[in-house]
Amino acid sequence: MNKYLTLSEASELVGKSKETLRRWDREGKLIAAREPVSNYRMYRKEQVENLFSDFLEEEEDSRNDVLPNLDYTVIELFAGAGGLAVGLEKAGLKCVALNEVDKWACETLRKNRPNWNVIEGDIRNLDFSEYHNNVDIVTGGFPCQAFSYAGKKLGLADARGTLFYEFARVVQQVNPLICIGENVRGLLNHDGGKTLRGMISILNEIGYRVEPIRVLRAIDYKVPQKRERLILVGIREDIDLQYEYPKPYKRVYNLQDALKKGDLYDCDVPASNGAQYPKRKKEVLDLVPPKGYWRNLPVEIQKEFMGGSFYLGGGKTGIARRIGWDEPSLTLTCSPAQKQTERCHPDETRPFTVREYARIQTFPDNWDFAGSLAQQYKQIGNAVPVNLAREMGYSIIAFLNSYYNSLNPQ
Image 1 (cartoon, one colour):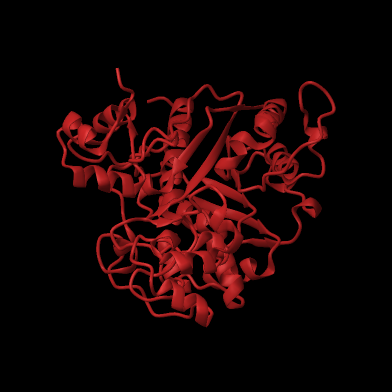
Image 2 (cartoon, helix red, strand yellow; image 1 turned 120 degrees about the vertical axis):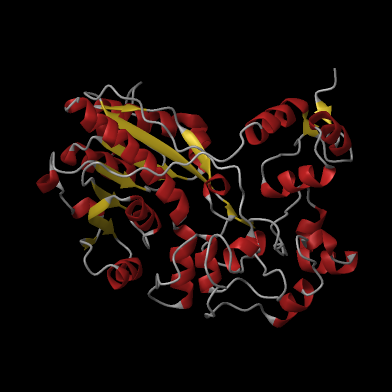
């Protein structure tokens, strides 16, 4: 029995038009097989069947929003420009302290939230013992760094010198009910999976049970961007409750939802500064249609633009890539005009502006970014999408409501 289906076969199997399946493909819900099955895009039959049941059996989207029963507090480490903090705030959580080493990101935080306690400086020089047993949540988007393995089971001491060690040290000092770490998807396989296993064993050592690791897709949580974040959730070992990840939404928002008036924003994107392409690059990208990339260029221009990499394998689909209005943006990077990760505006031949970048990350329009243009792009590109953070916030609130209700049963 064939494990793979053509677009026509998949359409016939689930009773949906080929255009619907093409849309699922564009939105990242339906992933074409990576194996060279044929010259056409092929899909795993099992994936098509699962997708159909996941996205079409429910009448309407479930909702994650829930009100906090008490004032729940957060310490955020590696806070950046505030994507995670703003999302958690929108959900109803209160940040009591935010630490960040980058001075421009700190200026951004202070500029937008003068009441926040922004602690600027290297986390390695900071002590959070004053918050011991007084804060519910510690969060942090620590960098992915390899560890030094001293023994068979990695302990906290073996992670010294890494920023995950600092995250775990602060968790140990504060002793929150729950800790949340977030990172890139690549952490799953970093150093053959040893890095992630080491992190889990360290959290176990300091008294936290790690829930099953999940990679959340931003497009499932009202973010018009194909971004993925690995989430690491630690529950204090004296708490016998399971954490539930936020439920995904069926609707996927696209670039038009991000930049035009609609359900996500009540006005078109405000005008703002933005980077520009060099003259020759603009001439080349002028030839690329919406949703196209370098392979849509005339062959001679492909060879000129790609240089030696023209003859190498791989799709390199991020090069000379123009985003379409009816698809989510590809993952934003810290620089809007890097050749390997091009994100060109659908109609105009230019990178996205600062405010367009911020919209794609679901920041509110009144969230201002400090520093040079390059610093602003870097802050936005590094951020956790605000809407994804808000949905995470709701799931944390649901967990804490259950915990405190269990202490005082009615």
